[in-house]
Length: 196
Image 1 (cartoon, one colour):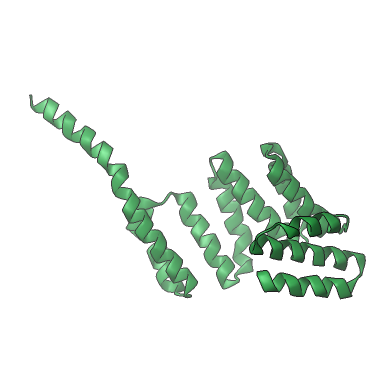
Image 2 (cartoon, rainbow, N blue to C red):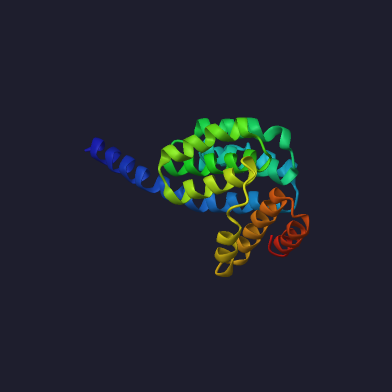
């Protein structure tokens, strides 16, 4: 009889355990977001390393939060190592696509062909057409220095939300810069700043 009670208690605990994590994860995420937003980096790092965070977040999510910290702080010297760490931790297709895309954009937009090319190959192998098309566009503009997407992006920006409109304007500006048309590059760069 006692074995049945013990089994019932274990089953209940296993059923409740994941549910307990949800509110704690949400509270911890809100706290970390606020600390990052208000530049409370010491508190952010302390909370990120706490046992509570290690309980509610996967190692991938903890390192992803740390990546965001480095981006907010402008610590470019730490980004390469952090991207490498996240690439090794990414297990699901969606996680791999997300981190490959973020790392690829960072390296390509900084003109680093050596680091961005293998990531472009990884994005291609994941076979997600929309992500692949976006990566090819970034590759064309920032690595190959092409300017053949201007009209396409102008058309796309007409129906885009503010954030995407800002990104399209930035990409258009970069293409005009590739053409040597600094006047239009500055015009679209100023437009992108209105939205980003």
